[in-house]
Structures are given as structure tokens and as C-alpha cells.
Image (cartoon, rainbow, N blue to C red; front, top):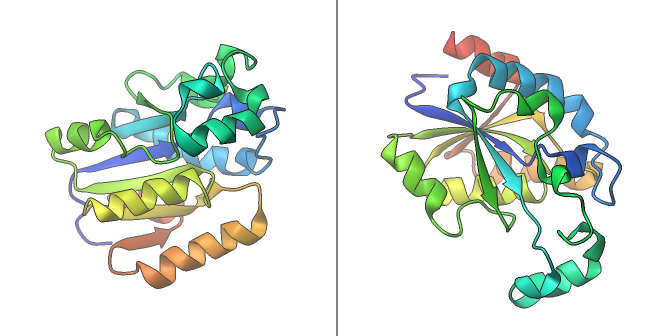
Length: 194
């Protein structure tokens, strides 16, 4: 694996709204939770949990996001109980020292806050877990590559609600971004850092 440098575990959207029975439920989440709990549990101070936070009402968002939330009106703040934005219960107890980072788009990079925070901590490597592989994980990963981080995606710690696009996303990342990104298993990463 080589020297890992200053790394952070960026865990994408492991929230109750995806873990529990909602229109956005991701059944696979339960299969990746043990790996995420292991990594975050061993290294909570290096873990940042992103949270996807829907607006209170569709009109609070610009452009096509407004149309998106008109379709998914039941997931807006005026209908979805606030506690569903919270982390899955098995992870919530790790905060603090783990941190949360709220975002209102698929990518956490849009407004520059996360990159500024990581640069202030001299982070050069991001270990990415969470869901969904073909949406928020993909947006997080591509943004991290653009911002020149070394990116490690733990393939047994990312999930999707669609098998075909999950497989296609990992194949895309492996084939097209192999210089800037590594795919590995959680145990391989943990044993590599000692």
C-alpha cells in the first residue's frame, strides 16, 4: 500500500433515511455497516460522516433540484421527521470524536468547506465508504480526484440499491481512474496501516 500519509475516513451518508423504511431505503446498507463500524470505531478521530440533508420544501432549492424534490416531496423537511437525517444508530455514538459534515447535494465539495477543512489538517489521502456507490459515493470520489487527493475506495464498505450500477461504478473507477484511485477491502486497508 505504500506510506499512507495524512488520511481521513470520509463516510458518505450512512443515515437513518437510507437505513430504515423510507422511499430511499438502501437494503444493502446493513451488509456494509460492520466494515464501516470497524474502521470508524478504530479511528473515530479520523472519521468524517457526510449527511445528505433535504430542504424543508422543494422551493428552497435551485433549478433542477427543485424538480427533484417535487418528485420526492415526502423526503423534504416538512414531511420527513428530522431524526431521519441523523446517522444510523450504530455510528452516531462515534460523534465526537468523529465529525459530521452536512451537504444538500450529492457531492460534499460544491461550496469548498470540506476541502478547506481537510487542507487545514494537511490531509492528502481519503478513504471512502458509504452509500450509494453510483450516486453520492461516486460524486464524492470524483470530486476528491479532481482536488488531487489520493483516494482509496473500500469496495466491501460501499453500497447501492441497484446491483448493476454498483458493479458498473466500481468498474468505471477501477478502469478509468487507476492512477488516482485504489480499490481495496476494509481488512486490507486496516492491516496496511497497522
